[in-house]
Image (cartoon, rainbow, N blue to C red; front, side, top):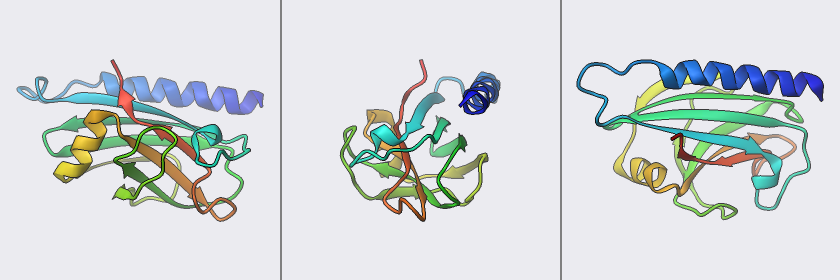
Amino acid sequence: MQIMRLAGIGALGLAMVFIGSSPSPGAAAKQRDFVAVLNGGQENPPVDTNAFGVAYLTLNGKRLCYSVSYTGLSGAEIAAHIHGEAAAGTNTGVLFPFPETTSPKNGCADVDKATKKAIRKGSAYVNIHTGDNPGGEIRGQIIPAS
């Protein structure tokens, strides 16, 4: 358990660097930062797991940049997505699939209007799926970082 806490602290430190990075000139007015804390209790139905994670996202126009880290899954990740639109505790379809199936996952991609809208409204969530929990092992609602 102590190792997982230390991993979580490390992930938070990495995320602060990610969020604190300077945007390109002229982009600051459009950029918005978001965070999600992932755990099994947010799954629907809840999943009993020691796994947890954190996701940091930045939206700038149609560009989404992300940094997602987790630890303690019951097995290998089989998929990870941003789902929406849905309130916390409600399931819905995939808006954006993360291309990586490892932790950490870092990257940037252009997203459609529906994905941007769901993230900005707080009606999107990050979900990490495993073989033992194909519906999702850990999940976190995406909320503004500040």
